[in-house]
Each structure stands twice: as structure tokens, then as C-alpha cells.
Image (cartoon, rainbow, N blue to C red; front, top):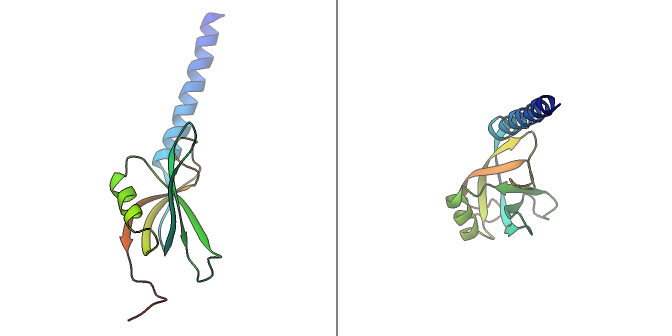
Length: 121
């Protein structure tokens, strides 16, 4: 009885580890999006995650929501610095996410400041 319980628990742990590794390390897509950075926040009650949004339209009707991993300190600092400005975000889309990684499937890996196409010199 104990042996079958340990084997069952072992199988469950191994399956969870495989799913976690797949979701964390296998990207669904990579891409770049540009827009005005309208939000960057560190939110959550028990588990805090970094979340943000960019507006991709003039009216703000097209909002792109994204997450940032805690390990990407430089990206977080740049996003805080560029608040309210036009930015280009490089991101990785995952198949799914876990509660402790972020709310979105889109994870920003790099940020660049851009000139807004709405205001040209």
C-alpha cells in the first residue's frame, strides 16, 4: 500500500515538473509590439508579480497586457523610467502561465524607447 502511494505521488510530481518545464522553457511565439506605456505595477497579495500595459491605438482601444519576470530587473527599471512614453517591447508568448509567474501569457524580455508615430518633428 505504501509503495503504490509513493509511486503515485512520484508520478504526479514528475508530470507536474514536465508541464512546468514545458510551459516555462518552450515559447509559443516571439514578437515585438509598440505603443504608449500606460501602466507598470507590482501587484498581488501573497504572490507579487510585475504587470504592465501599452496602448497601441490613438483612442486607447487596443491594450496589450504583459508580465515581467522578477529576474528581469533591468527591464523593470527601464519600464518604470519610460512610463507614459512610446516604447517597443520584445516579448515571449507562452502556452500558459502559472500564478507565481504573472497574469499574462506575454513576458517582456527587452524594452526600447521609441519616437511616437503620432508626433513627428
